[in-house]
Image (cartoon, rainbow, N blue to C red):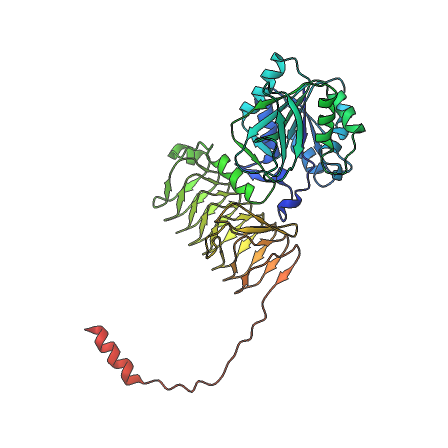
Length: 447
């Protein structure tokens, strides 16, 4: 069986986050976690489908993977063709093979793959699709299923209240004959972004037996920025750390005697420094060579390599990329890109006055994040001046600078320089100081 791992998405709804496949969790890009999980369950032949925007990075990544993984990277020419285009890009690699189609950024547990593999060997079916029961509407595909588990239809984004069932289609799909399925995709036409799903529908109508595999484990797609926080929490809860003196010495970790590390699931990377009176509360990940300075706090957060969590800073429930610099800041429930810095006194607002959910601007439309605490989202290479305040749910684009002493209540696009026009008024001081009253006050205070 060959795996087709879909990694060509352009992450449009995540902007200013550039490519969700290369978001780092526990020191590795997400796409690497996916590949290593496939290897763990015994799936060693993988075709990774990328696009022009990330093909070079994918090919570089593949070179460093275990030799047991036989990975081929192919390019999807037309990204507007979605999953259907990915299938056609992988066609030459899968002729005559059974295939497992997997989303590069829908995270499921190993159990999902093991169940599919087991059932594919036990049942005589043409295909299997992973389905998860949900209670709240999810903007994806829903499965119409008979009592015997056979799928009769896929309804893509039906809208809340119009779902044919509570089973959401997760992109872990098995097809006994990969070539036959791709042929169906090639001849299928659709005016919507559902050509892949329509091809499956056509196969079902033509008599192919495609069965649902119910799944009740962890599942987190990355469609919107706040999903990064949810996935971060999943990875943090799976940390197993060791901080014996021998271990710290071996990995050149410095932890001051007055520092506090509390709670489970804490990992500290090689060469990191945890300084006097710093506090780390798990679950938390501290990357390589990162400094958590005096009186700083990191809790329920992931901090990448080569960061400085400066004096008096608090990082709470946030995802920080690599080379992020802070100093007397509050960063709460936020997603910060690589190579970003915050001037002293700059804070991220993360709670509305009415305590309602935070809306976020997604491609021109306000979308409910489902979170009543959600802060700042930045791209890479962002600079913020001193004493700047960001309102909840604001986005700052890549390579943008934000000046000092302002309140930012709207999104900032890539490559912008933002400052406020203020007027400093200086005039003569005509007030008279009464020194006798001041002396009297001093006497009273001294008693």
